[in-house]
Length: 244
Image (cartoon, rainbow, N blue to C red; front, side, top):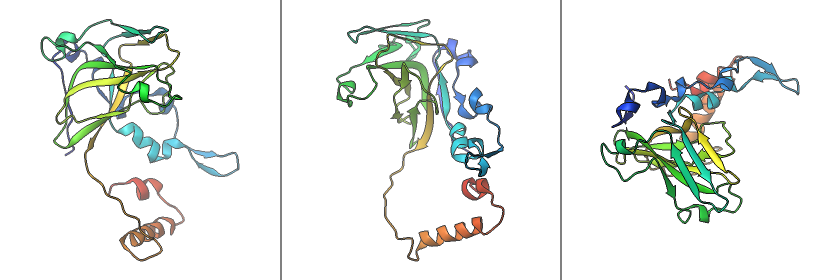
């Protein structure tokens, strides 16, 4: 049985509105990706192969994590001097913590904290924090990664990459980059704010081995290599990506 991630809310409005609930990435409709058919293709150099839809390194991107939709419309305006003003079509402030809260739907993440320290070629004017009416619970030792939707490009804003230890800190908020030369950002209700991916916190150490010598790693590599390519017909997905 797999691990369980739980999303809780004090807001009755959002609880009963399934259209803005977190969505497993595997069930989120991405039209351009769904339009790619798994098929053999001929490359410009005459060789044949398959497109990205047959490559698990791409396919599995769309199998992990949860898409978090915007629960309401947001409007953010940025002045030439770098100030910003925001509006939310519906406020969840009273539902952030089950009653009165000192959290606004959108807050300023002071430039002194990060933006002023970024390299000059970073395309970030300022960072805001979008507080959501969601609390997230993961098993002990598990966190979530916060990232933008894969293979997307937004010229005005995108979520800041980050992590949250949701076995301890349950309030969900997204630091969001407002990009340079952006005067106004409009985020529609239901539009993805970010993708979150649960993961187990583990400490790794590294070592370097010579695969020309006989050791457990060279044995493992060569045995698998021959079993895979010692056949006229290989099953790339099974040999490299199956957990069985």
